[in-house]
Image 1: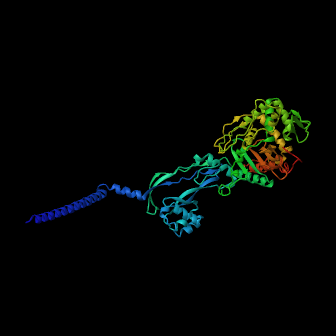
Image 2 (image 1 turned 90 degrees about the vertical axis):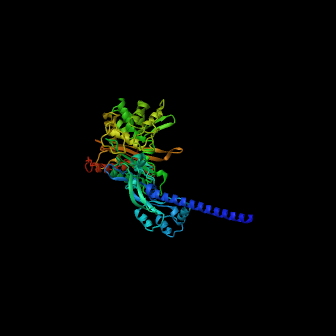
Length: 579
């Protein structure tokens, strides 16, 4: 065989060998891969089958939260003031929804959404797995939406806060936001107490995200704790109705009414005008949110005269039988002049209060000194927090200059140059009513009688109550007589303060009083801002509200009437009476 033939034969054998090697290599690799896959299958299904089970669970088992409802707020008799009701929230998984789905037209209609904006949102968030469509719907509407069976549209249960008394208790109870977090009033002050703690559970879902079965309870939901207020809803309705009526009748800017239990310091009623409906906040304005009884300050005016008189009797420099010469009906302090309605001449201390004599009480203040009056004001709770724990409480101003000028002593005695809120004023009159004990104020129902602090002698408070009775029977507060019950109180009429100082033609009409006067049960303060109907004195505007509210309240509290028919006439009024 030639060399050429040998070379060809060797080349063929080499080519054949290489082909066999390649084939064997490929076959070997293939067999190794198949063997590895087979072993992995055996391993996953026989040896280590826990892995596949876990991976399946990851794709079908989810952990969901369990919403906890917020605690119930009630009045002192268990009437609901704030409750949480179950509602439905519609949400969507944009990655599962075709934004051009025709049935979205009906979804938008039921949810009161813009169809164009709904489809735009679904396209915009196509890469997400969760967006809200509409929160806290009535369950019936949610059922109609889910009945369309649109892939990617789901619902979940939530809670919505509802306020049965509406605007009547709005300023006390307040409201929550959409996430059930307190924003105003008691809802804010006791948010942590009322808030529940969400639970967690493990559920099984299908490939459309629907819950098939509850598997395990991880943590149970803890509902919020209930709260029982001191408010009596019957008295609250009564006070709100009468205050709203007087503000409307006198075309006033607003008004406030506070009622306290004199033996416990509990707030039985607290209302303001204007108010708002916490169930419908679509037209809510910020100026209506304030609980003016606590947040707004004003000069209390002549309602401070009985307290100044108490300081006089307590000092020992004056007795109940003392007299004061108020002639000629005015006093001058440099460029300032203090005036009475007319020249009363020599009058008793009782007449100083019943006739609301600025000259008389200012002369007493000059004799006492500013510190004596100011210290009693402070002991009664003026110029300091009430401790009620309500958000936004204004403390007020109680002056304490290093040296009192005569005009400062005089004006302090009848409530100018200082500021209080309505609740502080009611607290001060509570001390006069109960024999000199200052109790801590509370918006929560007292389980037992609180421990009070004596700040005024029983004898002095008794003498002041006799003077306050004279105000209602024969003085500036005749229109405050509450039907068949005796009462005592004091009128006040003060100029409102504007951006440029006192407003000459704008007044606040005030009446602070108690009933029944021989054994007071409740104290009420009424303040009406800027009445415009011609009448503006406290005895003309605020006193009649006091009479109607106190008369109704005492009947509701089953207090036995004291007066016989014909002994009282609430329509009487002295011409030009003022206070």
